[in-house]
Image (cartoon, rainbow, N blue to C red; front, top):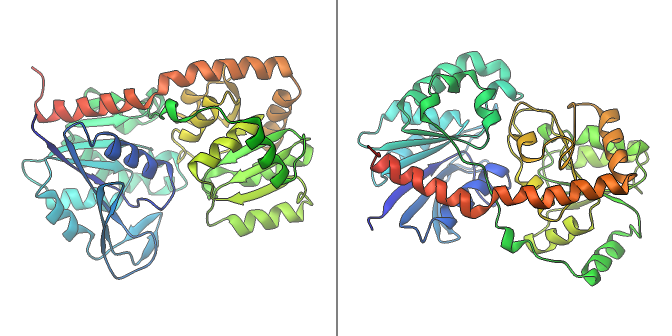
Length: 382
């Protein structure tokens, strides 16, 4: 079997923690034994004039320098040069969009005899940078026209994005997935140890996992905790950590809210196992899918999410695996969380449904269908 060389192109990669970064990791490491040779081109997540070559999880990662961030996009003086050099050895260029620098680089270089796959993670018109959409859409339209395949993680991404409709014949829906075999049982001893360490006793637990960033809507969740009789555990790091801790203190919620920072994979399972409700209070379309919902559902934890024009509610549908509320509404968040916490029968129904629905989002399916996309663009079926 001939090996296919794939160059993944995005703004950041591990150890920077984000959903798209994790998705790239899942694909590159998961297809390593499927005759797919992956490489990753990104920018440094911190300001630096130096570029860097490293290996993470047996995958080669090239980091261009970064002069800083503008409109959520890194500014780099040598990214285009690295793109030009690395693309020469690639059969497929896999751009993870939106990433204006990567998209402009492709259009400027116009690589010959390379297949182009685009994973359309988010529609910029649904994000906090919507004001830039009228300009950006022209760049994106030219890129999409050149694509051999456009991957979307849910039908709602396509439905809510007018620009995808002009290339609907190229679109392929491949839901993101998790390795369900890794989400095992957690002993009662480990649960008790964590509860004791967090000093939460037998209180009900509301859980959030993710980056502490603007689009996550954590201000609204913390405000909601004023009328929720439970403990909120916030797992993750980010630019807003000090701001959120201060907000919690100003509301006298120090005894209700626990900020625990970054948590490793094995320990994270224990957090999911003690949760009564998982909350994803995101407020912009920058939240397109949220793998953390799947992780919570793998433990049978009901989800409260927000009604965004993305794949968030495709993962956890309203009144099936949890409840969906309008974004930026602390009262609605509180009411939904309380409804689940106070109704054991409803919580049990959501839990059972979550355990069943999460089976649709297996890692095996995601990798199998992504592998087929690579094969098809290299040797299009008749």
